[in-house]
Image 1 (cartoon, helix red, strand yellow):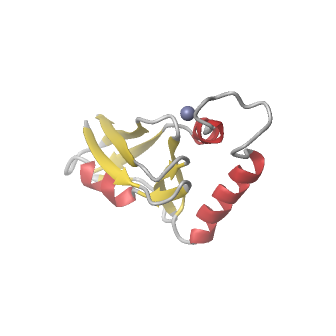
Image 2: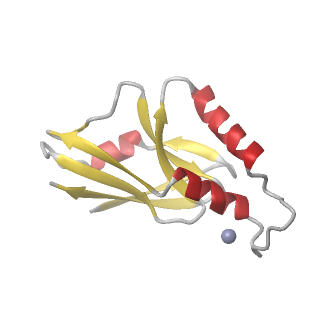
Length: 129
Ligand code: ZN
């Protein structure tokens, strides 16, 4: 198991962590890695890494659907939107890897989804053969 940290610079931002994850993959190893966020307001997803407008549009759409301030929200931290968005995106992804390389598609990147930053986040990468 390996762990690395990501410092985010905005309340909501998608950070491409593909190269950080790649560094964790065992040299010449094959198996499946799980990339896991240890937080309740920060998720992990895989999506397009070519056009940054995709990241913009994902955040825009989530914010339209899940406003930060919503009548009826009770949570005292006033970040219920961040908790809900994290559950929607999920806390982990699994990626097969072969001979030390992740089997990602040409346009796929791994993203840390910050919904309550800026913060320093911990990402765990574990492996099964
Ligand atoms: Zn909270």
